[in-house]
Length: 429
Ligand code: CAP
Ligand code: MG
Image (cartoon, rainbow, N blue to C red):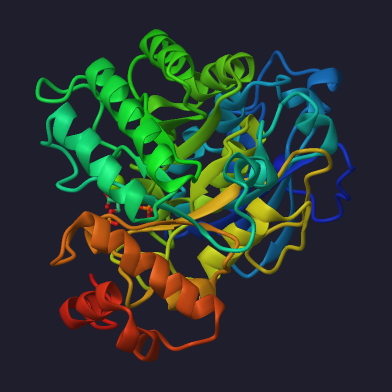
Protein backbone atom coordinates (compact mmCIF):
# COMPACT_ATOMS: atom_id res chain seq x y z
CA UNK A 1 0.00 0.00 0.00
CA UNK A 2 1.34 3.48 -0.93
CA UNK A 3 1.50 4.74 2.64
CA UNK A 4 3.67 1.81 3.77
CA UNK A 5 7.46 2.03 3.94
CA UNK A 6 8.45 -1.22 5.71
CA UNK A 7 10.70 -2.29 2.83
CA UNK A 8 12.89 0.74 3.60
CA UNK A 9 13.93 -1.21 6.72
CA UNK A 10 15.11 -4.23 4.69
CA UNK A 11 18.60 -3.99 3.19
CA UNK A 12 20.25 -7.30 2.31
CA UNK A 13 23.40 -5.46 1.29
CA UNK A 14 23.81 -3.72 4.64
CA UNK A 15 27.08 -4.48 6.37
CA UNK A 16 26.79 -3.87 10.14
CA UNK A 17 29.38 -1.78 11.94
CA UNK A 18 31.16 -2.94 15.10
CA UNK A 19 29.07 -0.37 16.99
CA UNK A 20 25.71 -1.74 15.82
CA UNK A 21 23.65 -3.84 18.22
CA UNK A 22 22.56 -7.01 16.37
CA UNK A 23 19.41 -8.98 17.15
CA UNK A 24 18.74 -12.47 15.81
CA UNK A 25 15.07 -13.39 15.42
CA UNK A 26 13.17 -16.51 14.44
CA UNK A 27 10.28 -15.12 12.34
CA UNK A 28 7.05 -16.79 11.24
CA UNK A 29 5.09 -14.38 9.01
CA UNK A 30 1.28 -14.45 9.12
CA UNK A 31 -0.43 -15.94 6.04
CA UNK A 32 -0.02 -13.79 2.85
CA UNK A 33 3.01 -11.99 4.29
CA UNK A 34 6.57 -12.70 3.14
CA UNK A 35 9.53 -13.02 5.48
CA UNK A 36 10.66 -9.60 4.17
CA UNK A 37 7.24 -8.10 5.00
CA UNK A 38 7.62 -9.42 8.53
CA UNK A 39 11.27 -8.46 8.90
CA UNK A 40 10.65 -4.92 7.67
CA UNK A 41 7.96 -4.51 10.30
CA UNK A 42 10.27 -5.86 13.01
CA UNK A 43 13.11 -3.50 12.08
CA UNK A 44 10.73 -0.56 11.73
CA UNK A 45 8.67 -0.99 14.89
CA UNK A 46 11.74 -1.76 17.05
CA UNK A 47 13.64 1.31 15.83
CA UNK A 48 12.07 4.53 14.48
CA UNK A 49 9.11 3.51 12.32
CA UNK A 50 5.38 3.02 12.45
CA UNK A 51 2.71 1.78 9.98
CA UNK A 52 2.74 4.75 7.66
CA UNK A 53 5.11 7.18 5.98
CA UNK A 54 5.55 10.38 7.99
CA UNK A 55 5.69 14.09 7.16
CA UNK A 56 8.20 14.59 9.98
CA UNK A 57 10.92 12.33 8.60
CA UNK A 58 14.31 13.82 7.71
CA UNK A 59 17.79 12.55 6.71
CA UNK A 60 19.16 12.65 10.28
CA UNK A 61 16.37 10.42 11.54
CA UNK A 62 16.66 8.13 8.53
CA UNK A 63 20.18 7.34 9.70
CA UNK A 64 18.66 5.78 12.82
CA UNK A 65 16.63 3.18 10.93
CA UNK A 66 17.30 -0.44 11.90
CA UNK A 67 18.00 -2.76 8.96
CA UNK A 68 16.93 -6.35 8.50
CA UNK A 69 20.03 -7.43 6.62
CA UNK A 70 20.59 -11.19 6.83
CA UNK A 71 17.98 -13.83 5.97
CA UNK A 72 18.56 -17.55 6.54
CA UNK A 73 15.32 -19.57 6.28
CA UNK A 74 13.19 -18.19 9.18
CA UNK A 75 16.18 -16.59 10.89
CA UNK A 76 16.60 -12.85 10.44
CA UNK A 77 19.33 -10.56 11.72
CA UNK A 78 18.52 -6.92 12.39
CA UNK A 79 21.21 -4.27 12.93
CA UNK A 80 20.49 -1.27 15.16
CA UNK A 81 22.54 1.97 15.11
CA UNK A 82 24.24 2.84 18.40
CA UNK A 83 22.28 6.07 18.94
CA UNK A 84 19.00 4.14 19.36
CA UNK A 85 20.05 2.97 22.82
CA UNK A 86 20.48 4.87 26.05
CA UNK A 87 23.72 4.09 27.86
CA UNK A 88 23.15 1.85 30.88
CA UNK A 89 19.39 1.43 30.42
CA UNK A 90 18.27 -2.23 30.10
CA UNK A 91 14.50 -1.57 30.28
CA UNK A 92 14.84 0.72 27.24
CA UNK A 93 16.81 -1.93 25.34
CA UNK A 94 14.09 -4.53 25.97
CA UNK A 95 11.32 -2.05 25.09
CA UNK A 96 13.06 -1.62 21.72
CA UNK A 97 14.20 -5.03 20.50
CA UNK A 98 11.63 -7.01 22.50
CA UNK A 99 8.69 -4.63 22.67
CA UNK A 100 5.74 -4.00 20.34
CA UNK A 101 7.09 -6.32 17.64
CA UNK A 102 5.73 -9.46 19.33
CA UNK A 103 2.18 -8.19 18.77
CA UNK A 104 2.35 -7.24 15.08
CA UNK A 105 -0.48 -8.75 13.02
CA UNK A 106 1.79 -9.50 10.04
CA UNK A 107 3.83 -11.78 12.28
CA UNK A 108 2.33 -15.09 13.40
CA UNK A 109 5.11 -15.84 15.87
CA UNK A 110 8.43 -14.26 16.78
CA UNK A 111 11.27 -15.35 19.02
CA UNK A 112 14.20 -13.17 19.98
CA UNK A 113 17.03 -15.73 19.93
CA UNK A 114 20.04 -13.59 20.82
CA UNK A 115 21.39 -10.06 21.02
CA UNK A 116 24.98 -9.19 20.22
CA UNK A 117 25.93 -6.47 22.72
CA UNK A 118 28.56 -4.12 21.24
CA UNK A 119 31.65 -3.23 23.26
CA UNK A 120 30.58 0.40 23.76
CA UNK A 121 27.31 -0.81 25.36
CA UNK A 122 29.06 -3.14 27.83
CA UNK A 123 31.09 -0.20 29.20
CA UNK A 124 28.04 1.21 31.01
CA UNK A 125 27.54 -1.85 33.21
CA UNK A 126 29.46 -3.32 36.15
CA UNK A 127 28.95 -7.01 35.45
CA UNK A 128 29.33 -9.49 38.34
CA UNK A 129 31.05 -8.11 41.46
CA UNK A 130 32.52 -11.46 42.53
CA UNK A 131 32.18 -13.70 39.47
CA UNK A 132 32.96 -17.41 39.64
CA UNK A 133 36.41 -17.04 41.20
CA UNK A 134 35.15 -14.55 43.76
CA UNK A 135 32.27 -16.80 44.82
CA UNK A 136 34.63 -19.78 45.13
CA UNK A 137 37.06 -17.63 47.13
CA UNK A 138 34.36 -17.09 49.78
CA UNK A 139 34.39 -20.84 50.49
CA UNK A 140 37.97 -21.61 49.44
CA UNK A 141 36.44 -24.52 47.47
CA UNK A 142 37.85 -24.93 43.96
CA UNK A 143 37.77 -28.56 42.91
CA UNK A 144 34.13 -29.54 43.21
CA UNK A 145 30.68 -28.01 42.52
CA UNK A 146 29.44 -25.71 45.27
CA UNK A 147 26.35 -27.19 46.90
CA UNK A 148 23.11 -25.44 47.81
CA UNK A 149 19.81 -26.58 49.21
CA UNK A 150 16.39 -25.04 49.66
CA UNK A 151 14.54 -26.13 52.79
CA UNK A 152 11.46 -28.01 51.56
CA UNK A 153 8.40 -27.75 51.84
CA UNK A 154 9.35 -24.64 49.84
CA UNK A 155 7.29 -22.35 52.06
CA UNK A 156 5.45 -23.07 55.30
CA UNK A 157 8.27 -23.57 57.77
CA UNK A 158 8.50 -21.15 60.66
CA UNK A 159 11.69 -19.08 60.97
CA UNK A 160 12.90 -21.46 63.66
CA UNK A 161 12.22 -24.55 61.52
CA UNK A 162 13.94 -22.87 58.56
CA UNK A 163 17.02 -22.03 60.59
CA UNK A 164 17.15 -25.53 62.07
CA UNK A 165 16.91 -27.05 58.58
CA UNK A 166 19.79 -24.82 57.57
CA UNK A 167 21.92 -26.12 60.43
CA UNK A 168 21.22 -29.74 59.52
CA UNK A 169 22.09 -29.19 55.85
CA UNK A 170 25.21 -27.13 56.55
CA UNK A 171 26.54 -29.71 59.02
CA UNK A 172 25.71 -32.45 56.51
CA UNK A 173 28.02 -30.82 53.96
CA UNK A 174 26.06 -28.13 52.08
CA UNK A 175 27.88 -24.85 51.38
CA UNK A 176 24.89 -22.58 50.68
CA UNK A 177 21.42 -22.54 52.17
CA UNK A 178 18.95 -20.95 49.72
CA UNK A 179 15.52 -19.42 50.29
CA UNK A 180 12.93 -20.61 47.80
CA UNK A 181 11.79 -18.24 45.08
CA UNK A 182 8.38 -17.70 46.65
CA UNK A 183 9.61 -17.34 50.23
CA UNK A 184 9.91 -13.68 51.16
CA UNK A 185 8.30 -12.53 54.44
CA UNK A 186 5.10 -14.47 55.00
CA UNK A 187 3.22 -14.36 58.35
CA UNK A 188 4.66 -17.72 59.43
CA UNK A 189 8.25 -16.82 58.50
CA UNK A 190 8.98 -13.11 58.61
CA UNK A 191 12.14 -12.01 56.80
CA UNK A 192 13.95 -10.33 59.67
CA UNK A 193 13.35 -13.17 62.13
CA UNK A 194 14.31 -15.83 59.58
CA UNK A 195 17.52 -14.11 58.61
CA UNK A 196 18.63 -13.41 62.19
CA UNK A 197 17.95 -16.98 63.36
CA UNK A 198 19.44 -18.58 60.25
CA UNK A 199 22.70 -16.66 60.41
CA UNK A 200 23.02 -17.69 64.08
CA UNK A 201 22.68 -21.32 62.94
CA UNK A 202 25.13 -20.63 60.16
CA UNK A 203 27.73 -19.48 62.70
CA UNK A 204 27.07 -22.62 64.76
CA UNK A 205 27.46 -24.84 61.69
CA UNK A 206 30.74 -23.14 60.76
CA UNK A 207 31.99 -23.74 64.29
CA UNK A 208 30.97 -27.41 64.18
CA UNK A 209 32.40 -28.14 60.73
CA UNK A 210 35.29 -25.71 60.50
CA UNK A 211 34.00 -24.92 56.98
CA UNK A 212 32.72 -21.66 55.51
CA UNK A 213 28.93 -21.68 55.15
CA UNK A 214 26.67 -19.05 53.60
CA UNK A 215 23.05 -18.22 52.81
CA UNK A 216 21.28 -17.10 49.60
CA UNK A 217 18.75 -14.77 51.20
CA UNK A 218 15.73 -14.05 49.02
CA UNK A 219 15.16 -10.28 49.21
CA UNK A 220 12.59 -10.25 46.39
CA UNK A 221 10.07 -7.47 47.13
CA UNK A 222 9.46 -3.80 46.26
CA UNK A 223 12.79 -2.12 45.44
CA UNK A 224 13.17 0.11 48.50
CA UNK A 225 12.29 -2.88 50.68
CA UNK A 226 14.91 -4.98 48.86
CA UNK A 227 17.53 -2.36 49.70
CA UNK A 228 16.52 -2.51 53.37
CA UNK A 229 16.70 -6.32 53.35
CA UNK A 230 20.08 -6.35 51.60
CA UNK A 231 21.45 -4.00 54.25
CA UNK A 232 20.24 -6.37 57.00
CA UNK A 233 22.00 -9.30 55.27
CA UNK A 234 25.24 -7.30 55.23
CA UNK A 235 24.77 -6.32 58.90
CA UNK A 236 24.39 -10.00 59.82
CA UNK A 237 27.56 -11.00 58.01
CA UNK A 238 26.07 -12.56 54.88
CA UNK A 239 27.79 -12.42 51.47
CA UNK A 240 24.79 -13.10 49.19
CA UNK A 241 21.34 -11.92 48.34
CA UNK A 242 18.98 -13.82 46.06
CA UNK A 243 16.69 -11.95 43.67
CA UNK A 244 13.89 -13.30 41.47
CA UNK A 245 15.22 -11.14 38.66
CA UNK A 246 12.22 -11.42 36.33
CA UNK A 247 9.49 -10.78 38.85
CA UNK A 248 11.29 -7.78 40.34
CA UNK A 249 12.16 -6.47 36.86
CA UNK A 250 15.23 -5.15 35.11
CA UNK A 251 15.10 -1.69 36.61
CA UNK A 252 14.98 -3.05 40.18
CA UNK A 253 17.81 -5.47 39.40
CA UNK A 254 19.97 -2.58 38.18
CA UNK A 255 19.21 -0.69 41.41
CA UNK A 256 20.02 -3.70 43.59
CA UNK A 257 23.28 -4.24 41.69
CA UNK A 258 24.35 -0.70 42.57
CA UNK A 259 23.39 -1.23 46.21
CA UNK A 260 25.24 -4.56 46.35
CA UNK A 261 28.38 -2.90 45.04
CA UNK A 262 28.42 -0.70 48.14
CA UNK A 263 27.37 -3.56 50.44
CA UNK A 264 29.86 -6.01 48.89
CA UNK A 265 27.09 -8.58 48.38
CA UNK A 266 27.00 -11.16 45.60
CA UNK A 267 23.71 -11.61 43.74
CA UNK A 268 22.12 -15.02 43.17
CA UNK A 269 19.69 -14.70 40.24
CA UNK A 270 16.59 -16.89 40.36
CA UNK A 271 14.74 -16.97 37.04
CA UNK A 272 11.18 -17.80 38.17
CA UNK A 273 8.69 -16.64 35.46
CA UNK A 274 11.19 -17.11 32.58
CA UNK A 275 9.39 -20.18 31.20
CA UNK A 276 6.29 -18.04 30.61
CA UNK A 277 8.09 -16.56 27.60
CA UNK A 278 11.27 -18.56 27.02
CA UNK A 279 9.86 -22.05 26.65
CA UNK A 280 7.86 -21.76 23.39
CA UNK A 281 10.36 -22.49 20.58
CA UNK A 282 8.35 -20.31 18.17
CA UNK A 283 7.51 -17.24 20.23
CA UNK A 284 9.00 -15.06 22.98
CA UNK A 285 12.62 -14.64 24.05
CA UNK A 286 15.32 -17.17 24.86
CA UNK A 287 16.72 -17.69 28.33
CA UNK A 288 20.05 -16.88 26.66
CA UNK A 289 18.99 -13.26 26.19
CA UNK A 290 17.76 -13.11 29.81
CA UNK A 291 21.03 -14.57 31.09
CA UNK A 292 23.20 -12.23 28.99
CA UNK A 293 21.42 -9.15 30.30
CA UNK A 294 21.60 -10.49 33.86
CA UNK A 295 25.38 -11.09 33.52
CA UNK A 296 25.79 -7.64 32.02
CA UNK A 297 23.93 -5.96 34.91
CA UNK A 298 26.00 -8.09 37.25
CA UNK A 299 24.50 -11.19 38.85
CA UNK A 300 27.12 -13.57 40.29
CA UNK A 301 25.07 -16.82 40.03
CA UNK A 302 22.22 -17.71 37.63
CA UNK A 303 20.06 -20.81 37.14
CA UNK A 304 20.69 -22.48 33.76
CA UNK A 305 18.77 -25.78 34.02
CA UNK A 306 19.70 -29.44 34.46
CA UNK A 307 18.74 -31.33 31.23
CA UNK A 308 17.89 -34.36 33.44
CA UNK A 309 15.69 -32.71 36.12
CA UNK A 310 12.01 -31.88 36.51
CA UNK A 311 11.96 -28.61 34.53
CA UNK A 312 12.27 -28.23 30.77
CA UNK A 313 15.92 -27.50 29.92
CA UNK A 314 17.06 -28.80 26.53
CA UNK A 315 20.67 -29.91 26.16
CA UNK A 316 21.76 -27.29 23.59
CA UNK A 317 20.09 -24.50 25.54
CA UNK A 318 21.90 -25.50 28.75
CA UNK A 319 25.25 -25.83 26.94
CA UNK A 320 24.83 -22.42 25.29
CA UNK A 321 23.83 -20.87 28.63
CA UNK A 322 26.80 -22.46 30.41
CA UNK A 323 29.26 -21.29 27.74
CA UNK A 324 27.78 -17.79 27.49
CA UNK A 325 27.97 -17.32 31.27
CA UNK A 326 31.47 -18.69 31.76
CA UNK A 327 33.42 -17.57 28.71
CA UNK A 328 34.89 -14.18 27.78
CA UNK A 329 34.47 -14.91 24.08
CA UNK A 330 31.31 -16.85 23.11
CA UNK A 331 31.33 -18.43 19.62
CA UNK A 332 27.88 -18.30 18.08
CA UNK A 333 26.12 -20.96 16.01
CA UNK A 334 23.02 -20.95 13.76
CA UNK A 335 20.80 -19.93 16.68
CA UNK A 336 23.20 -17.71 18.63
CA UNK A 337 25.56 -14.79 17.96
CA UNK A 338 29.24 -14.30 18.77
CA UNK A 339 29.70 -12.31 21.95
CA UNK A 340 32.85 -10.81 23.48
CA UNK A 341 32.56 -9.96 27.18
CA UNK A 342 35.85 -8.01 27.55
CA UNK A 343 36.19 -7.11 31.25
CA UNK A 344 32.76 -8.39 32.34
CA UNK A 345 33.38 -11.22 34.83
CA UNK A 346 31.77 -14.64 34.30
CA UNK A 347 28.58 -15.60 36.11
CA UNK A 348 28.39 -18.89 38.05
CA UNK A 349 25.89 -21.32 36.40
CA UNK A 350 23.49 -23.00 38.83
CA UNK A 351 21.92 -26.37 38.05
CA UNK A 352 18.74 -27.04 39.99
CA UNK A 353 15.30 -28.59 39.71
CA UNK A 354 14.44 -32.22 40.45
CA UNK A 355 18.01 -33.26 41.27
CA UNK A 356 18.91 -36.03 43.71
CA UNK A 357 22.06 -38.09 44.51
CA UNK A 358 21.27 -40.67 41.79
CA UNK A 359 21.50 -38.19 38.89
CA UNK A 360 24.00 -35.61 40.12
CA UNK A 361 26.78 -37.36 38.22
CA UNK A 362 24.88 -36.95 34.95
CA UNK A 363 24.54 -33.22 35.59
CA UNK A 364 28.31 -32.89 36.04
CA UNK A 365 28.99 -35.08 32.97
CA UNK A 366 26.57 -33.13 30.76
CA UNK A 367 27.27 -29.61 32.00
CA UNK A 368 30.47 -29.40 34.09
CA UNK A 369 31.66 -29.80 37.67
CA UNK A 370 32.39 -26.06 37.70
CA UNK A 371 28.81 -25.23 38.69
CA UNK A 372 26.63 -24.64 41.72
CA UNK A 373 24.27 -27.56 42.26
CA UNK A 374 21.03 -26.94 44.16
CA UNK A 375 19.17 -29.95 45.57
CA UNK A 376 15.91 -29.36 47.44
CA UNK A 377 13.53 -32.32 47.40
CA UNK A 378 16.44 -34.62 46.62
CA UNK A 379 17.93 -33.73 50.02
CA UNK A 380 14.90 -33.17 52.25
CA UNK A 381 13.22 -36.28 50.88
CA UNK A 382 16.03 -38.49 52.17
CA UNK A 383 14.53 -41.15 54.49
CA UNK A 384 17.17 -40.42 57.14
CA UNK A 385 16.58 -36.65 57.14
CA UNK A 386 18.27 -33.52 55.80
CA UNK A 387 21.70 -34.02 57.30
CA UNK A 388 21.91 -37.49 55.72
CA UNK A 389 20.53 -36.07 52.48
CA UNK A 390 23.37 -33.57 52.38
CA UNK A 391 25.89 -36.32 53.07
CA UNK A 392 24.41 -38.45 50.27
CA UNK A 393 24.85 -35.61 47.79
CA UNK A 394 28.44 -34.98 48.84
CA UNK A 395 29.09 -38.72 48.49
CA UNK A 396 27.60 -38.72 44.97
CA UNK A 397 29.87 -35.83 44.02
CA UNK A 398 32.92 -37.48 45.63
CA UNK A 399 32.15 -40.65 43.66
CA UNK A 400 32.07 -38.72 40.38
CA UNK A 401 35.28 -36.85 41.09
CA UNK A 402 36.97 -40.17 41.96
CA UNK A 403 35.65 -41.74 38.77
CA UNK A 404 33.57 -44.28 40.68
CA UNK A 405 30.02 -45.15 39.62
CA UNK A 406 27.46 -43.97 42.17
CA UNK A 407 25.99 -47.46 42.59
CA UNK A 408 29.44 -48.87 43.35
CA UNK A 409 30.27 -46.03 45.75
CA UNK A 410 26.97 -46.58 47.60
CA UNK A 411 28.12 -50.03 48.69
CA UNK A 412 30.16 -48.48 51.51
CA UNK A 413 28.40 -45.11 51.93
CA UNK A 414 25.19 -45.60 53.93
CA UNK A 415 23.50 -42.24 53.22
CA UNK A 416 24.05 -42.61 49.47
CA UNK A 417 22.84 -46.22 49.57
CA UNK A 418 19.57 -45.21 51.26
CA UNK A 419 19.05 -42.35 48.79
CA UNK A 420 19.48 -44.73 45.84
CA UNK A 421 17.06 -47.20 47.43
CA UNK A 422 14.44 -44.42 47.31
CA UNK A 423 15.19 -42.67 43.99
CA UNK A 424 17.62 -44.93 42.12
CA UNK A 425 18.86 -43.05 39.07
CA UNK A 426 15.34 -41.93 38.10
CA UNK A 427 14.75 -38.64 36.30
CA UNK A 428 11.80 -36.82 37.90
CA UNK A 429 9.28 -34.87 35.81
C1 CAP B 1 14.16 -26.63 42.91
C2 CAP B 1 13.55 -25.25 43.05
C3 CAP B 1 14.08 -24.24 42.04
C4 CAP B 1 14.09 -24.68 40.61
C5 CAP B 1 14.06 -23.46 39.69
C6 CAP B 1 12.02 -25.33 42.93
O1 CAP B 1 13.70 -27.41 43.96
O2 CAP B 1 13.82 -24.70 44.33
O3 CAP B 1 13.28 -23.07 42.19
O4 CAP B 1 15.26 -25.39 40.36
O5 CAP B 1 14.14 -23.89 38.36
O6 CAP B 1 11.40 -24.53 43.63
O7 CAP B 1 11.57 -26.12 42.12
P1 CAP B 1 13.97 -29.00 43.88
P2 CAP B 1 15.41 -23.46 37.48
O8 CAP B 1 15.47 -29.20 44.04
O9 CAP B 1 13.21 -29.56 45.04
O10 CAP B 1 13.47 -29.47 42.57
O11 CAP B 1 16.61 -23.87 38.27
O12 CAP B 1 15.23 -24.21 36.19
O13 CAP B 1 15.30 -21.99 37.29
MG1 MG C 1 12.62 -23.00 44.14
